[in-house]
Length: 240
Image (tube, rainbow, N blue to C red; front, side, top):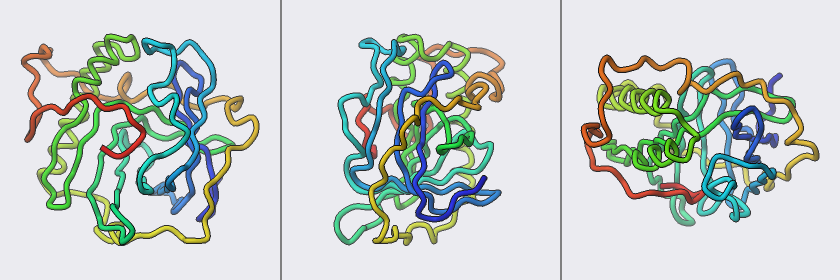
């Protein structure tokens, strides 16, 4: 199945085979090599009830009604364990940088697509300098039981791999996306009834199955983060 530009689909996050977040987005491009979606300001969130792996049993964004701040463009290739998010600031939409969101490869459903945020992210500034974000938050998710030690190590390896790609300048996404703007006729999408009842086709996260393990494990204190110091914890549904 393919989706038309401007169409509304549900971006679901899957934990334990079930959705714990439904997030409405507009389709920008749906091709064999790229899925581009857009979250307009105020795009609604939906949180099914459940006993989720967090201290309070709720999704970390629970309590927020929708996406905060400016709209966000998200680019992801099939099979990739990360998506490239683009942000703009102010009424003139000044480009504010890229955000490499580590997440499971998307899997299509009858209502949209499924993925899982892997917590670790990379902030890329307009001058193309970058820094790792939320390393400590990733370890917190391990302590809460969402990720195993093996998965955390895999996610950290994935972040290092993406960082090396950034260092070499081998970016597959073009600069033309910096000047992209949404169609003004697009409306904030509403979520379809029964969105959370659709069975997920996801088999496992890339954190569990596809990343090579390091030859020797490193402790949290030994673990290095390229280019910048670790950021403070952040769980707000908004850019950086």
